[in-house]
Image 1 (tube, one colour):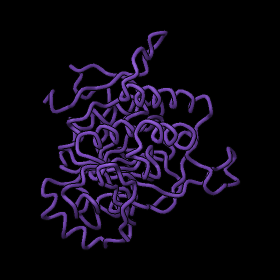
Image 2: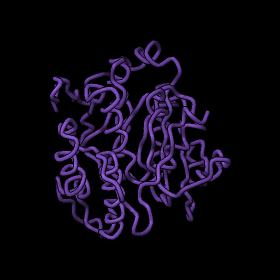
Image 3: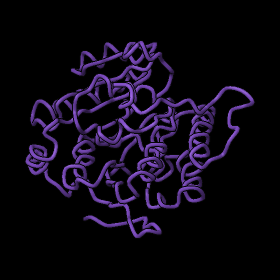
Amino acid sequence: MVEDVGATSSGSSITTSHWADLSLSRLLELKATAAPGGVSLVVPARNEAATVGDVVTRVREALVDTVALLDEIVVIDSDSTDATYAVATDAGAVVHRSAEIRPDLGSHPGKGEAMWKSQFVTTGELIVFMDADLTDWDTHFVPGLLGPLLTDPTVALVKGFYERPFTTDDGTAAVPFEGGRVTELVARPLIALLFPELGGLHQPLAGEWAVRRSQFETLSVPTGYAVELAALVDTARTHGAAALAQVDLGTRAHRHQSLRDLGGMSRQILAAALTRAGVAGLGDGGDDPRVERPAAVSLV
């Protein structure tokens, strides 16, 4: 079922749908006319040897080998020190080391950097992003995210949302609706205060999202964890909130990070949001969390 949420002062809204609204066969029909330039799946990964192989293998078997919904699966290895590169390659992905893509542009650590660099080594006119650390998920994430882009040419970016149970460190217990700590404690309060037009988004920091290349290549991209929020804010500012859509993907679980790591993530998200709200002087007292890459279209 499709519904509109998050109405803005101009009357636009964010469309919400469910992954099962469109069959795989229907999506394949739509792709032929709505995305003749193809679809790329990009998986940014850093030290995810334990899970990236399963992510790549299952998606490849379901959406490349069985049906041709995806034209390529590309893993961007972000300075891994484990076997991520080898595992992803063995699983059937095309793997690039982030630092080796466009070396003339230099390299920064971070998830956003890997996603930004992916634009130079992928070909699809639609790009789907998926995290590499998934443990409870299904391949319907990909077609679910593509649905709004294939059915509505005015949609530029699609976010996934899901139930995210919080799994204890020993993996023995999962607490429903206790995942997404940075989303609930940082991102959603920021959105409510600074970007209320995005208030209808359930999980603005979700790692599973899809975007038109023609849109992504115009965005300034934070090199770290703020890439998702920045893309939403900048897309809504350029095209209005109606250019955004979100899809219910069911349930998703992944490896949870320590509070120390989440603190660094939160700082980056705060910096990107406050910068876009016009707050000056961030990072002047030490390392700068605001490092961003320019629109890729300006560098091609």
